[in-house]
Image (cartoon, rainbow, N blue to C red; front, side, top):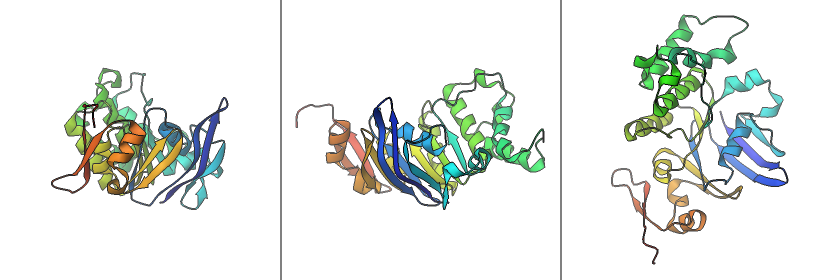
Length: 257
């Protein structure tokens, strides 16, 4: 299912956080949003999972205006993993993962055999099955990240939006998580700070600066030394990855040209 942001603008207290953002995420593709802190990345994502209503513009899922759908239907189509998606209550891992089925249940309906199997499969994929009976507050930050992604996958969405999903993860789990995203077949919009991870994982990248989209395209087209210096204020040499050919950035700490 396609995801389209059309002229998205968010103004709060007279300040434009996102300005006229238009971006398409084709069905089954992984699109990354990158940009400096405060550039509007998380704000744009909040509009997609309906935590925030845009001042103007439209978010469409397929042919439907997201704002015209019920919250239940939205949650069936779009799952989110957010930066502030903490679980402070002493739920077990398997209980939190099972919450992903909530948009599909009615009343006090319990989980059936299929739902339980979905939860088991998601925990296996995220390498957290051994933590199933552990209380979430006892987990490390990286373990919690994987629990929250498992919950999102159990939701069986068409579209997955993730805000910094690799935070707190070690290198192995960063690579495994991004590889998993590419293999789900879902339409994915993900915010990443690490430009090298974005280049490796994303089909297309959108670069935000001061709330505006300043570049969009394949990693090879977007991630140039000139753009990185202009938007992020750092010098970098861009070289092809020896195996994949995708761009990789080598940052320079030397302030001289």
